[in-house]
Length: 138
Image (tube, rainbow, N blue to C red; front, side):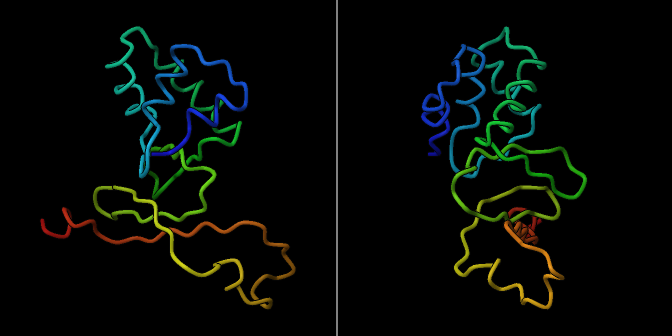
């Protein structure tokens, strides 16, 4: 399980019923939901929650640095609550399923100095692509 709820409470983020439900929907490992998926799951817990509230809450969580927006191949943005655990993503090229992966090594150190073109590199995003077992079997 991710620790999203605890992190938000630790920041003193005002935990309204709507914000709590959005955080609960996102909380967990390998969670990469679209805003519409978050909204649909949130409605099941709190029927009166609006789409605008979900979008605003997700935006606030991203601004706080507690949730990461993940965009892959022109698909809808997905929201990843594992913002404080370094990881990369494994994406199914057919269905878009996303999994967090934790390869060994340091991709930042793997970039040779001559390939940095004078940049002071501070962050690396790696996306592995392939077919998930379900799509590969189809």
